[in-house]
Image (cartoon, rainbow over all chains, first blue to last red):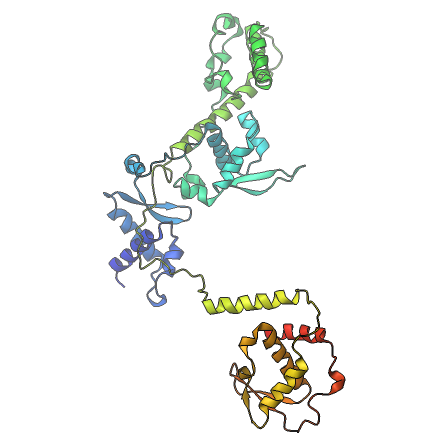
Length: 207
Length: 223
């Protein structure tokens, strides 16, 4: 079985499946006596990716495997195929999701302590219904609170291969970098004290 | 005060949170404005540090949420390519159910349901005994008769049941032989070899139809 043939079978499978396929799944498609090695399949995938360089589709590796998907740059036009607008998620939902994604496993109390407000049960319910978030265990403290974590579906949905693909979290700045004025001698404090303390307006915090 | 009054009409809890925050900030501010003696005690923890840390922490995840929102997302920015092919469309793997199997299943259900049915015991209008005699008479002289032939569907369910019970009774009494040559093949009936001394013993004449009815109702499922 030559390389072109393997390449085409892989591409055909990806198109027909309409979902991510893992290397193992693709390998299973071939008869045993002509089954390509995982390396050969990876090679085929690399070629498929290269062939689509200038096309509307791109090959992307997500958590469950490889998939051919529409390039995001055409999303605006393509989305008009469907009359309904894609669902928008509230800031609260996205922040909750972000905390679960970056700090998993995490309890509701920990989410609350960062966001400053109680976790809306509907948000967690929505995240679970979308199968983005699941209970991964219980913290061994009184009350055994649920530990929340993200799912493979979450990674697939946002086009991520693993959690390391998440956009990097901003660095925490040291106090001194934030407001160098703090280290100035006390004598001059009367006038400069009018400067805003923080980059964030305070009323935002408990929102 | 007007402001607080207004807040009361709104969400008190929210107002409280804002007030706490405002008070904390005011406290920090006033501490800042007070001159500190230069021989201040060993560097005490900056009271603002904790607040700043928490605000920063929150800010990080606020940014992260925006970051996640901007990720190309299925159904909004991208779609998994799919070229459905009739070749690959799998034939539904659900087993096909034929009408016949359904009928068989239905009959089993009916048979089971009948076990729970109430049997209204009444004097039999068609005598099993009489039918037994009829059957023996019909078989007289013949070697084998087809089992099915003994039934007369035009008599309705009741008549068929009586015939069936009569046959069972005859078999039980050793007056009939029931033969099946092959599995699922037709049943054949013949008179038992030994000549019946008395086809219809009078003592059994007033037997209890109720018991027999129960047997008859259970047997079709097994037969």
